[in-house]
Image 1 (cartoon, rainbow, N blue to C red):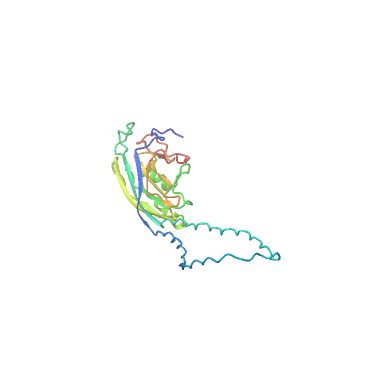
Image 2 (cartoon, rainbow, N blue to C red):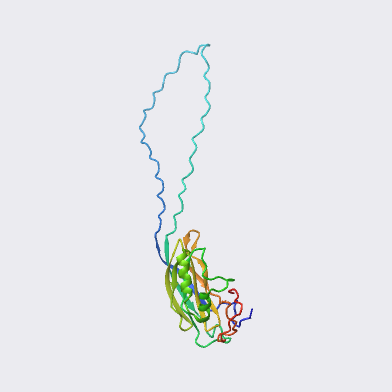
Length: 256
């Protein structure tokens, strides 16, 4: 594997911020059981004191047998109220903030620094748009090398058709870095994860993004999360510099 001049183990200078805008389809907790009704009591007149007995018991009178104390009734365990289900959907705002500049990455900094249009999907655990170690799909390859959103959009639509993804997530480009882009999308119980990518441009095949970010944790939607982004190499071009000429990798390698 070629050693790229881009510092692949340092932050690129880009951040993704996600926070919830609205929740829908909330299930309310079941009502607590009502307290048992208490029957009204009636006053019982105190008994008058009986006069002492004047006769002694006869020898033939049987001796009364003492009764054993009865056990006190067992207190029933408290009724447990199940935790409420999370809302069926959650609307998120995704803020992509690029701080990449000649000040943050002065070595060989390229002219016209920018990021391609954001593209991704909401999906379940059974789907993967991209992941570290995987060989780049044609869609990820084209996104990382040219910034194009096709055929990655078609690959995502195929996942939606299979039922493993729910929504195509799309946003604008950052035409000049530093810069910012904002988009909104809706996550659901069926598709609580999100994957989003954008090309570092210019570059041979470098990009930033998140893969399979789970927004539903411990039975609740994440209210806010901030992620410092690392640069990834798609493994499809062997160029060493931001502005290297196209040099297709003969045997494509996994994303690193």
